[in-house]
Image (cartoon, rainbow, N blue to C red):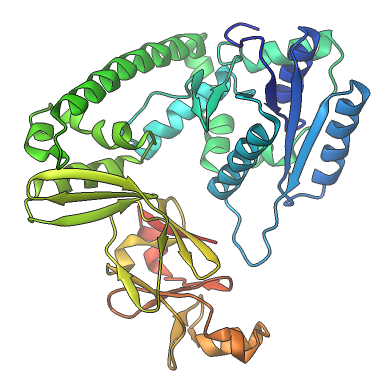
Length: 410
């Protein structure tokens, strides 16, 4: 298959048409493949899908690895599911010694991703890369130049069975809204626009790679013993300043996070530090330094936030804070936030009225000796935003008018 070397591969398979066509083609081409499947535990059909893939692999004597996600006490989301999938893929790659992960994203996915990035106002509108570093190896998407219809044609021609995910027909998520309500009229207005848009995405990715390479070399050359001089970063054009954070961390960020980082660099406050995901950016005496951390929160430890809040440990609880399209309206929040044990008198706003946090924990039958271990998130005004594992605040009219939201996941 074009772009995929003949090395041992791990193939992510959901059971849908796209991934079944991918794994069938790799198998027919003689690749050494193993299959990884994530049972999300969110749909009744998931059990049957897992059995279907396992049987398909067993018939062909292909190694099969599966994990089932446990959402007990946690809120599932597309972002949380995606993180769990990729963490599982990376673990299986390490355990099996396979350095190549192959996924079945295709041309239609590319177009949808570009439109999602555009609608969300993301800083980098460049779609899905065909290949990128992943863990200690590489992630390949060899079907990006092929349309969904081409994959369906292959499946019918070669009698490839698959399982249809009924949730793909729903319009709850932005990507599905674009797929079902925006793309059809675009195809009518401009037949063949998918090919042109995909080609433009490839061209944009090439430009972005060249710019990122330049920024990486520039930062390496500017680096001194105490870090990178902030003044040298600010000499770059604004478009290239926006690439500094992704270049230093090797990760992607929302446009809000990129804007926050660039603004933070430009404001001279002497010594300061902010967190973006699991990265700490420190500025001291005109120099920028970064390191990767997993922050632990102690009792009553407030943390100053950027606009990408990151992942934290609170005791044995892992919390993820991010900016998204649903959750708690940012306009209703005063920063910084504090994560702490419950206190007498704590109340959380609900759809109708408010409720004592202590009553929520009692109703949830949390033993008294464990209640003080339940993390509570409050803002700078002492407003309770979440009782982790149990409730997230509801702010009524704020939620109808808000454009950006704080997402809290556990």
